[in-house]
Length: 242
Image 1 (cartoon, rainbow, N blue to C red):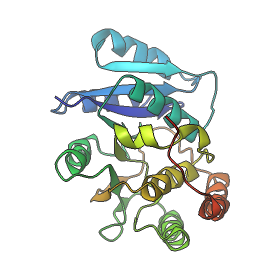
Image 2: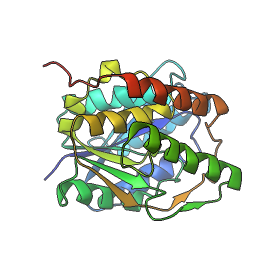
Image 3: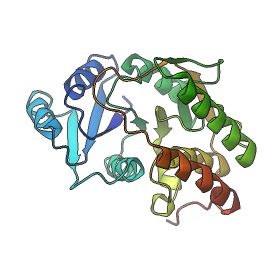
Image 4: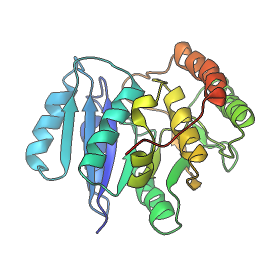
């Protein structure tokens, strides 16, 4: 059976973390979870440790000493997952904006349809976002249009954070050279995957804004993505040296 792991970065997710873990473990297909915990003061880590006693072979956690950014959290998780020889490595938010029931669909896009990267896409079938203010929907949608235009990458949801990678993609990308830390990280990883010749497939999902906890989005995150795309266009993307 393929080894599959879902990486979930957390910062102050005590309202969501147990429910999201149980929802993933309730799925068919033996998914594992790696939580990247950034020193949440609300006790998120204590909840995960308690659940590790219940799921010792499936639930893992890396604790970091502070809020170090989404991109570095995922890179930490990618490196660990590659070392542990997981075949398929997923990204997912803790707050149920990504529906755990879509994980098998992302897996099938890779395992059955031959994609190297499957993206849970809000925009490949119109706009599928619930509970966001209209201003944020417009900003997010046109950010993806901007990225697609500048980079020439045929991906409709360029900032999506719900994804499944084949391990070979993460082994090929030079993760130490990834520069962007916030949502620009999601763009950079997709662009690197695209430039290195891997097959990308978008899987339509419905994105529902979080009901519990607080959003980590900020204008600075969008600013980084805007200017970072210009710099990304100028860079040569080379595979990691063995």
